[in-house]
Image 1 (tube, rainbow, N blue to C red):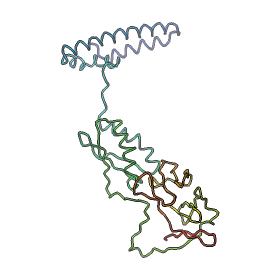
Image 2 (cartoon, helix red, strand yellow):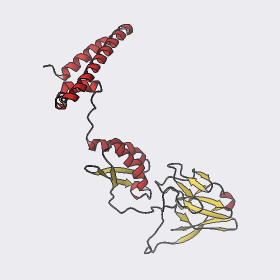
Image 3 (cartoon, rainbow, N blue to C red):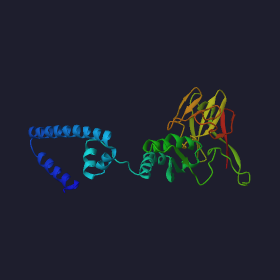
Image 4 (cartoon, one colour):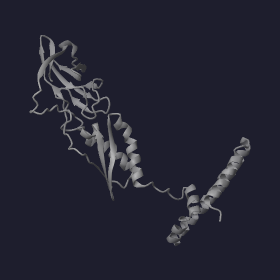
Length: 281
C-alpha cells in the first residue's frame, strides 16, 4: 500500500513540472485541480454527515487512518491537533516577553496545575513593581488565556514577598549613615505651572511642578516599570506616563490608575525665588 509520504512526493513532482509551463497552461492545470478538489470536498462532506448520523465509531475509526486524516485536514473538514499545553503556554510567554524585557523584567513558567491553573514568576523589575498585578492581568494572563482557553487562573508566585510600593523611599531607621541636605535645583520661574521640568540631582532624576507659589517634587519614574515621566502629557493637574498611560495627580503624587500607589515625593522649600529640594544621602 502506498504511504502518505510517497503520495505527497508524487504530487510535488507534478506541481514542479507544471510550474515550468507558461501561464496559460498553468491556469488550465490549476483550474482542473481546484474543480477536482471541490468535487472531493463536497463528496467527503456528505460522507461525514452520513457517518455522523449512522455510526460515529466508524467515523472516528476512519479519521484515525493517516491518509484519511491528511485528506480531511487538507480540505479543512477536521481541526488540526493542538500543540501540547506547555508548548502553548511558552508561546504566550514569548509573546509578552519582549515588552517585559524592554523594562528590565521577565516572566517564567513555574507550574501547570490541571485542569485550569498556571503558576508564573515575574522577575526583574516586574517582581517588585507596585502595579505587578496589572502587568499580570493585562499582559501575561491575557496572553496565556488567548493561547490556552482551558486555563482560567494565572497565579504569580514570587520568591520574596511583594513590595507594596517600590518607590516609597522607606529607609531603615537603624541606618547610621543617613544625612539630609537641601540642594538648590531651580528658580521658581523655571518651574512650569502647567507642565513639569526634569532635573538631575545627585544621580537622581526628578520632576518639578508648580501650582501658584507651591512647588512639588517627585522622582522621575512611573511606579509601573520606572519609565521617565518628564515627557508625559499634563492636563488639569494630571500627568500621564508616555510609556503605558499611568496617570498621577501632580498635587499629591497619587496614582489614578492603580489604587494605593503614589510617586516618590521629596520635600521642597522656596527661598528668595530659589527652589530647594531635600535629599537623603
